[in-house]
Image 1 (cartoon, rainbow, N blue to C red):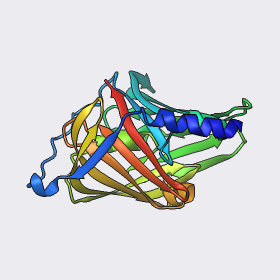
Image 2 (cartoon, rainbow, N blue to C red; image 1 turned 90 degrees about the horizontal axis):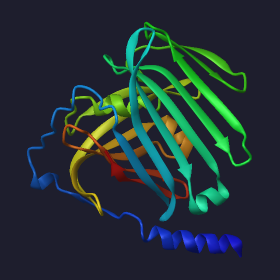
Image 3 (cartoon, helix red, strand yellow; image 1 turned 90 degrees about the vertical axis):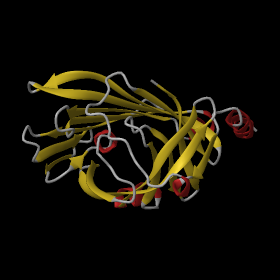
Length: 261
């Protein structure tokens, strides 16, 4: 009875949340032009996303460029991401995540990465990734005494820096962009394909012209059972990720921008 009540309440609360509609407008706005991105990340930018799973409010994610600081006498951006479950998801899966990524301000490559995962019984697991000053190697370790040395070649990012480094690229609709992502002590090949321009209308925030980006990697397959995810980035110089959709074996997870500054 208690679980049923929580389910019904979650559905009711979901109906009051931000709403989104997406429409392909590529044929209406040809040729497609994307503004050049800003040359630097914007300290103070804070993006908050509302999550839904099976059309039920499931939590929120916050991404914040906290500060410009220094590591090894080099300026780095300190970016923090937090993920907190709510409603029905919190009842069944009460796990909170905090991620810190330090990104070289000049080259937009990762310097240090830290992730913590805390469950409702206060069990804490941590993961750390430290890149060499030259950027050609990295050391990965966890609280479970796992440790690994990795050889880094090409454009290799951590989970969080991948978002911000891609937003800073001078991208073109219709093209393909390969990247590599380090996760769980392994380097995963990934591929981002830019598709059509869409009109994304978010209640309370307004209308955004956004390019649809398909992110494909075997990492997705391992986590969700499918190798692709959709992300919509505004075509203006801010490159705001306004909406994302991840397919799982029991339905889609949606992330919708609910506030930003």
